[in-house]
Length: 159
Image: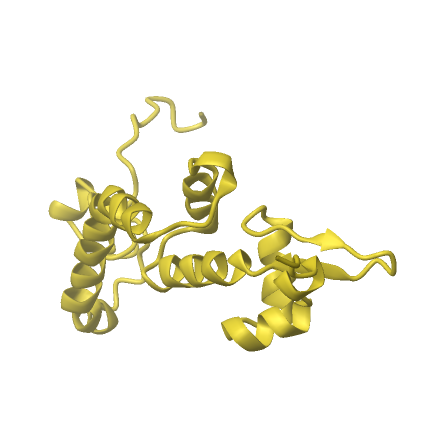
């Protein structure tokens, strides 16, 4: 049985872009971050194996739900022999990311619920803002832009 030439299994960056829907610049960026790899032709052109299509789809799906690229790279690095992720891999990794996603959803709910209040409050204080500083203890006591940390006052007025 004749072998299929390797060049039929490789995609140029333009072909990978067209097939994956990712911009060429995004593919170069993914490669610089270690998410995909390419080989070089004798003319120094990038060539990607066809499995790069699935890796790009995996990266883009993870990005759409807010997973940072560093986390995606770490997940891909866990795969044996840097193989392409399959359905089981996605299920395992997405389960591991569930807690992080739940925390983000909670933050978005907080933003949604307090956005109108924040715009209308007029405090102009990042120290007491329920959105930028949600765990502020002093914010429970007093609000406003003049809130100063309590300091011990010097006894000598010249000090």
